[in-house]
Length: 354
Ligand code: TXA
Ligand code: MG
View 1 (cartoon, helix red, strand yellow):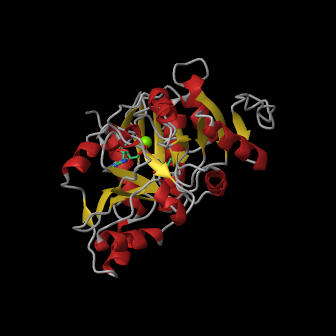
View 2 (view 1 turned 180 degrees about the vertical axis):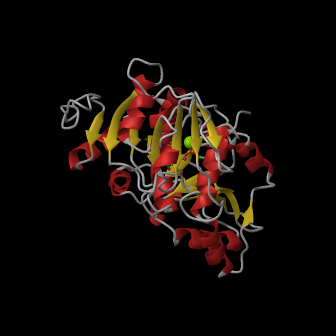
View 3 (view 1 turned 90 degrees about the horizontal axis):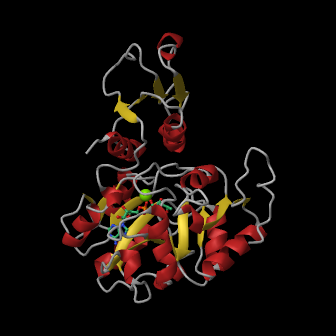
């Protein structure tokens, strides 16, 4: 494959598919994508498993590798507002055009918009829907990559379906092992360091009746509401649209998602660690020694309870604890407002048993 072995030479990181992002590895990733291959990419939210969005055969490999149901549509990534036309149809409704200009104000960044699908996007990307989800990410590595690609890039989160999303290159490698069915098709994992946000992008749907929040994420509902209010639009939460409802039934928005294999308990009330059990505690701020001593292991995501730090480290902590053969993982909760809405959305799904 001719991968520059900078990182693979390090003994703690023997997976040859992980390559530090550099001008040459980014060029190589663009070349692999052009050939219809899969590449894992860093973004500011979580790592993505990328393919050329115009190439149905390439996109099919994403579904195979992730074991993702064909009914769950993908997000398409483009380099700039000028390149949106590679993925979406230009809005005919003036209200949607206005909503798109608000969305563009958050780009590049962790906001995805569902809008009318362009003619070059194959059915497999959108699971046959008339809409497509699109975003312009801000991570410098994915920006450099997208600007080298003459096509838009489809990329769901780079985790096997229903498992916790990946926020480091190592997480991606762990989820797609070479030799395993899906793992074999991930050719290159571009290492752009740990993700800055740590939770997936916010998803809204731009509709003639007004914008709808479909998934809380890195951009808060409060920020969106303020910007939409300035153009006289109010942001609704959740969708009553038939197509979007059926997208909601897809695993990406189903209850059981992002789940570790170990039972996850959310600490809505003060809770002592059950005696005789090996429990890992995920704390959102520093806890005292008496408390800490009850647990087999403790991860403090932020000394001060800063939700940006909590979001950034949450998936890493869930993954690490999941590898420790614990009986349970106990995790703090927060108010579901601001970034807390995305954190609680992911935790509630991860803790759900149905
Ligand atoms: O931050 C992110 O959004 C990451 C990075 C890699 O960009 N991507 C990500 O993709 O989280 P994924 O596939 O894990 O989640 C995308 C969600 C899914 O729940 C899917 O159902 C929804 O977006 N979606 C995609 N296209 C849609 C559409 N046309 N209508 C409604 N929902 C859609
Ligand atoms: Mg996902």
